[in-house]
Length: 230
Image (cartoon, rainbow, N blue to C red; front, side):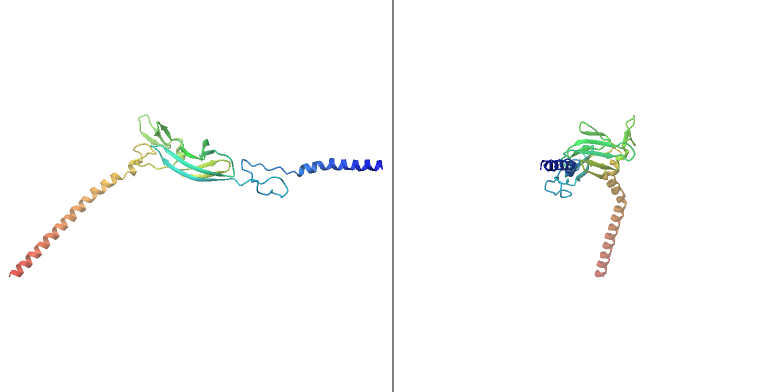
């Protein structure tokens, strides 16, 4: 009897020792989330584990407005991060032929300088794609030519999204290029003056026709009166 009990006990110990690795391997480890939140209400992927699959990470670019602010080109942005607890965004301006410009640790919405723009005392003094010569004149061509007329911008929170943004144009009220470069071409005032000068001959001809018509009408009425009197 004792021998039978010892045999049974030995078999139970053997089963426990052999089965322990299998039981340990049966505990499913949750997959890496890469910053994505875990959905506690979702079922496990295989129906047996004790974890829930991560929510799908998604980044939506809500706002991407190129603006001109006191002669400074800027990008106004806002992103919405889904499935991640991260609260900062990294903006990468993608250079197709060289080093990118990276702005990291930014809030999920805000305004950033356009690469190559220089701001002093709140006013723009240098612009991407332009360089100033020693004599003070501006010519096109510098290391930031690639950010104009448009550029790809990548937003990264944990998911990422890439969009294309256009360089903000100059206007008489706000310059995104050196003074006297492109604003004069866009200024409608010279065009209006030219239109007025070209219309002067037309106005003179029109006035002459009106005067001739009035003279002809007067002559006709005078002829009728003479005919009635006779």
